[in-house]
Amino acid sequence: MRIIKAKDYDEFSKKAASILAAQIALKPDCVLGLATGSTPIGTYDQLVERYERGEIDFSQVTTVNLDEYRGLGKENDQSYYYFMNKYLFDRVNIDKQRTHLPDGMAPDSEKESERYEKLIEEIGGVDIQVCGIGNNGHIGFCEPSSIFEKVTLCVDLAEATIEANKRFFESADDVPRQAYTMGVGTIMKGKKIMLLAYGEGKADILAKAFLGDITPEVPASILQLHPDVILVGDEAALSKFPDS
Ligand code: GLP
Image (cartoon, rainbow, N blue to C red; front, side):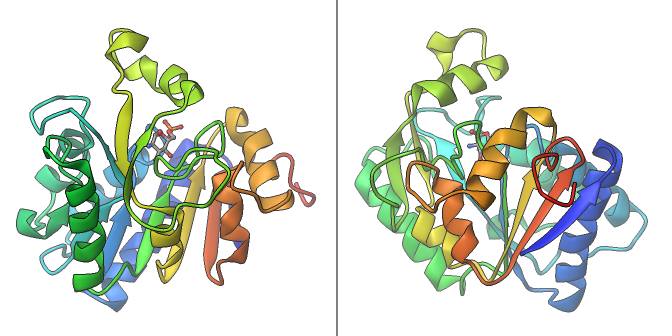
C-alpha cells in the first residue's frame, strides 16, 4: 500500500485528482469507479479545474459509482445520481451514457443488483476505484457484518450510517433505510483502489482498517489484501499511523 499524506484539504484534493488525471492520461478510455460523500468533493472540483484548463479529456471515460440510496429518484438532490451530476458530470465533457449508478427507483432490488454487477463486468471492470470510508469502517455502503459481501446488493443501512448521513437530510427520518452498493468483492476486483480519508474523525477507523485485523466487522480492512491500494489522507486522518 502506498500512503500519500497531505497537509490540508486543498493539497489532499489536488493529490487525489492528480492520480485520477494520470489514470485518464495513461488510458483515455479507462473505467473510473467513483464515490460520493463530503470527502471527494474537492477532488471533483480539482478535476473540473484541470478539465477547464484543457488538461483532461473525459470524452472516452466510463464511470461506475459505488452505491446509491434505494428509493431516491434521479431528481432528488440527496441521490448520488444528483450528486455526481452536480459535482462532476455536468461540468466536464463526459458522455452521460457512459456514467453509471444503481437505479434507486428500480422496482426489483435483486434484479437491479444483478444488472449492476453484470454491467461492471461488461464494461471490462474498474481501472481505479475511489472509496471513502464510513465512521464504522464501511466502504460503499457495505456495512459491518459477519461476512464480506461478494457482489452488488441492496443492504439495510446501519444505524451509525443513518446517524452520520443525516447531516445531508432534513432529519434522520428522511435518510433512506436501504441502499445499493457494490459488494466488497466487486470493489476488490478494481485494478487499483484509491481510498480517501480526511479529518481527525477518520483517524481511529483508518488505523483499525489498515493496521488492525482483517474482519467483515470493519469492511475496509479487506483492502489490506489488495495488491494496489493508494491511501490518500491528511495529517489528521493519518495521525495514528506509525510514521506520522
Ligand atoms: C457515505 C457513502 C460512502 C462514503 C461515506 C463517507 O456513507 N456511501 O461511500 O465513503 O459516506 O462520507 P464522508 O466522505 O462524507 O465522510
